[in-house]
Amino acid sequence: MSEIIVELKSVSKFYDETAALDGIDLYIRKNEFVTLLGPSGCGKTTTLRLIGGFEQPSGGTILFEGKDITSIPPYKRRVNTVFQRYALFSHLDVFENIAFGLRIKKLSEKAIQNKVTKMLEQVNLEGFEKRDVNSLSGGQQQRVAIARALVNEPEVLLLDEPLAALDLKLRREMQHELKSMQKQLGITFVFVTHDQEEALSMSDTVVVMQDGKIQQIGTPVDIYNEPTNAFVADFIGESNIVDGIMRKDFLVDFSGSSFECVDSGLAQDEEVDVVIRPEDLVLIPAEKARLSGTVSSVNFLGVHYEMLVESDDGMSWLVHSTLMEPVGTRVGLGLEPLDIHIMKKVSSP
Amino acid sequence: MKRSSLFPYMIWMILFIVVPMFLVLYYAFTIPTETGATWSLENFGRFFEPIYLKVLGRSLRLAVISTVICLIMGYPAAMVMAGNAFTRKNVILLLFVVPMWMNFLLRTYAWLTLLERSGVINVLLANLNLPRLNILYTEAAVVLGMVYNFLPFMVLPIYSVLSKIDKGVVEAAGDLGANSYRVFTRVIFPLSVPGVVSGVTMVFMPALTTFVISRLLGGGQFTLIGNLIEQQFLVVGDWGFGSAISVVMIVLILLSMAVMSFFEGEEKDVALW
Image 1 (cartoon, rainbow over the protein chains, first blue to last red):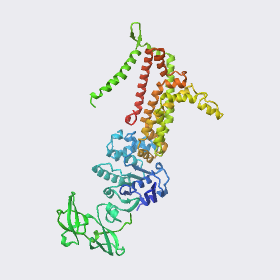
Image 2 (image 1 turned 135 degrees about the vertical axis):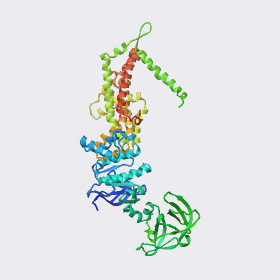
Image 3 (image 1 turned 180 degrees about the horizontal axis):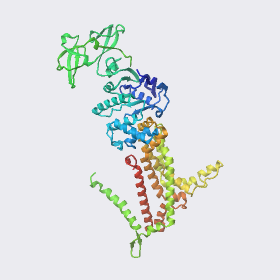
Image 4 (image 1 turned 90 degrees about the vertical axis):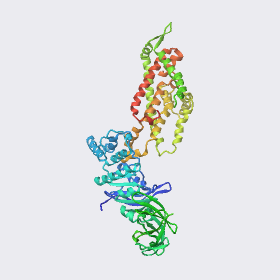
């Protein structure tokens, strides 16, 4: 594992009385692609702005390569930011926008020329040097914003929902480009998004946040397969979440039946959240299943069908399957012990 | 808009702008004779006599001084108002605008009574055992009057442009390594140029042509170009010469506006005009 470059220690941020960040601890390793993921208002952008130096934390410390940078202004930090709405300098052309940071550092005209030209190649904007930034499309402006930040060769690049304003196709393209740029340049990326698919496909590490707290940190695979609580499970991908009671180790009751599971170590009769991914539910003949119900809606989504099955206890189950049963059919839902994820109830209001 | 609905405006513009303009041009390029009038450039020739050029020079000098002072005072004021640390911007904005609700003459007369030998300021200074301030009927008083009257025209356009600058742009400059001085010189000021151009134009033009301020606060000792035109029409009765000076002024103003719009670049839409 490579060394830690940015570290947040019990960092809080209060606006008036409300906590945007509630004592978070987080470290980011060199050359990692880290995504801060969460719904709006979860504190992900605040975290990014604290690392960038645009906000001061109300409490806690921020370390950069082991040194305290909590009160150092943005212009002295070796991080650069790609802003959500690009924030390009409208009085400068594309070349001068990208050259801005280099001119501040007083590099020679030749060095600036070299670096900017290289950067323009990197982001596929050759020939755009003299263009007015206001005349560019959203995707092109995005590229200029990325080039303007990367040309300074920062240790860490912060990206605040940089793809939010792009259409779906462009977004996919940029996701791949950003990822390959990050690998090629070996720069640490801290990426903020509310799009879980984006987070899963791009990141080395995903940090799931909610209400100013970190819910889970892990690789995309871990986050998806082993969510630590019902919030993460629900936010990352679609889930069926039902109340259950842990009868004993490896046995859980929900929807009126007992099911074998792979979880242990909870108290006897503890109330838990049971999370089951829609793709883990298999349609089987009703008489063979402990869980059965009636198909109430069918949606064709291309790769698979999305069906809602109303079980006898009134619960709706979301099922993803390549097979389709028409509405009104009585079906059984089969599931393996491994597919039943048991989560401690979150004691939240 | 339908063509026909433009009609009233066209009539208005012809009656009150186009016709008077042609009258001014007519008087400027003619001299009266016994039989009527004859085409001549004599009126313009007179204007280039040293005594009148001196008046033009003084007008330009005082207008430039006033504009520069307005800019130096107005820009920081606009910046403070546009800054987000400042929560009472409406109050300050109002304070700048309220004097503009009062009659221009009254405002200028008010300075007369303030600056008089036994006026409010001098009484106050005397009570504090300080020397008198004798600036009434000097160029300083004229400049003071211009700055006082025209300052809002500098502050408002600059404020309007500054307050529209995206905060993200300022943050981006800081992020790219610019300290606050560099952020100002490389980003904020360049982006505010359209406002500065508007402000400079809106102060310089009236300052160049005013005749009330120089008459009241200059005590008639400082003839400015505006006073000269006024005298030719109302005192001397030489409409031809008065018109010629007016034409010269119009040309000067058009030229300066052309220069200004060159600086303004392509971002006209941001400024007031």
